[in-house]
Image (cartoon, rainbow, N blue to C red; front, side, top):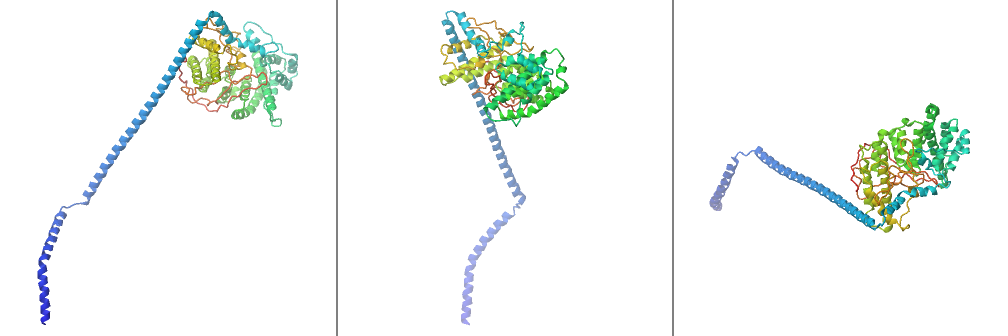
Amino acid sequence: MGDVEKVVEINLTSIMESTSPLLDKLGTAFAKLKAHEVAASNDLKWSDVEDYFRNLESAMKKKLEDIEAKEKDFTERESRNNMLLDEREAAIVAREQDLLDKVQELKDAAVAAISEAKASYVPEAGDEIGIKVSGSVDENTELNDPEGESPCTVEENAEGVAFEVNPRAELIHLCEQMDSKGILNFVTENLKNPPSICKETSVALGSAAKPSCLVLDALEGFFPSAEVTQEGENHDDAVHGTRHACLILIEALSAFLSKADTALDTFLSPNIKWQAKCIANDWKPKLDRETVDATNKVPLVAEAFLRLLATFRIASEFNEDELCKYVLAVSGHRHATELCHSLELARKIPGLVETLLANGRQIDAVHFIHSFQLSETVPSVPILQEYLKVIRRNSQGNGSAALQNDYNARELEALKTVIGCVEEYNLEPEYPLYQLYKRVSQLDKSFKGDKEKRPETSKLQRHQQKRPRSDGRFPAKRGRGSGRGFRGGRHGPPPSTGRTSYVGHPQRYPPVVSTPYTYPGAAQSPYGAQASDPGLYYYAQNDQSRNPYSAVPPTYGTYQQPPRQPYM
């Protein structure tokens, strides 16, 4: 009992001793509780917290938008500055090129002055230059006409001098017998002189009972059938010769109809026109296939197709845009403008001129411009100046002597061509020829005395036929203004203005497109972009071979005249 009381007394003592610290801890806890109670009495709400964070988010978004706007403005300013730099760079390059042109012009003037100072007798030097410009035509006329009867005789004597064409008896007999195969073979065997055989045939067709039927029957072999088609160069030459003969027959019939005293309805009855249309419908898909294949006979086939439509008056049966594709292939032919008149394509000519200019066919474009009286809306002088300017630019630069000689030869031919156009269309008041004749003199003298140095120019360019005028007559031997000769090296007879000849040749005047400088204002071409090397079409003398035109895609756009810069 005593022990129990002793234990109880000890526990109470320890409890009493620990009361004071507990009270201190309780006071501390109570004080903290009071502090939390004061904080809880502030009445904080969740909406206040949400609004706070919403405002914070809006402020951040606004700052982000400001940064994006500044970035966009910086990008636009950077792009604008880059464009300005590009424009200034292009302007500097153009200015530099203009300065180079002026320097070259000063060089030419200096060389011309030196040449004139060295010449002891100026008129003699001018006469010699005149021979170089125009004398080559007569030279090759003799080479290519061994029978002594020049194909140009009719052309030279057409103005005021009557010239009688006497067909050979064999040809007249074939026409009288209506022997279509015989007359086709006869023309094929006499392709050496196409203008002469065409004249003979046009007269001989008057002996045929039905000249139109005779020609249509002869066209049967234009596209050989699959049974007789063979491979090989000889076969291709034979087919080409046959097509060439067919083309001459169509031309001869056209000439016969133009001179016939009887009404055209007598020779071009509805039945005849229907037969001609059937032949044209048969040719067209085959022509399109050959155009796609870019064969070297496309110009001949295209011209034969167009002449068939024009001769038999059935052009209205075909789409004009498609006809313009084929006109592009023969645009360099001497009768191209006359053919377009016959096909009644006058309203399509502005677009055709646009396409020719876009493809570097400036000289062809000039002939179309004047033939269809578009010179007021499309001035030809800037076109000729740009043509020569691009030729000059392309001939500048470092290269071998042979390459530079080739460039000089091209420039010389281009100068002669432009002089011919200026003389033919009386453009001298707008485009004085003094500088051009001086340049011709310089280039001729650079080749003088060293025949091996001068690149061999095509014989075609020295055997050019004069193009017929719009009235069907051929000009005299001297063209317009031909009485003006070189005097003191300042003037001279114009070079031959004929655009083509009857000799196979790649190009009379090649397409001119500047290498480092794109042609100004090259908008989409109305009839598609012509291929890179659209050559001219000529009659063949020896092997009856022609050089190719390239295919012309059938797209059509709008006419837009590109701006041009002066040459000199």
